[in-house]
Amino acid sequence: MSPNRIALALGTLSLVLIAGALYFQYVLGYPPCEMCWWQRYPHFAAILVGIGGGLLVRDAQAARIVALLTILCVALSGAIAVYHAGVEWHWWKGPSACTGGPYNGPLDLNKKVVLCDIAAWRFLGISLAGYNAIASLGAAALGFIAWLRK
Image 1 (spheres, rainbow, N blue to C red):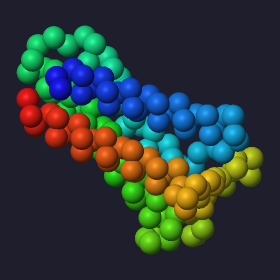
Image 2: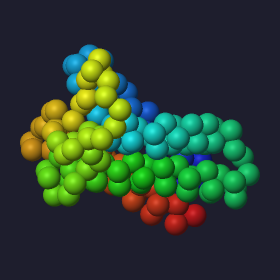
Image 3: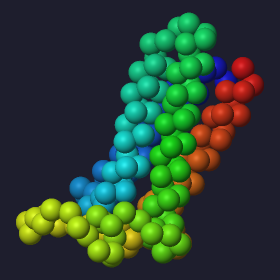
């Protein structure tokens, strides 16, 4: 698989995952927590780099760099998702700003805090963070294998 196709495929996957997250947020009414946002940022970058670079870059070496950057962005989102899923299962502590622990930040009584350590939705015992981890890390691994094969 060419580096351009790797970048396009992973950029498109990120676009699909973001569309799914927005569907859950705006159609089904599940607002994202702080850690959900953390997972989205690398996907936004993967969309920009993967689709933009995959369509525009024609130099072979630059295309390999674009593909690798896209792979890294998707893998980063997956790694954050693993951390978030672990927080949801209470395997480790999450940030105090959005978990059940003490919070020492500014007080804003008008702001609804969505807790990061409570999964708002699960299917087959896996939360949205868990599905993002599976999809993102799996796709990044496949993309990296394809990238290594030149």
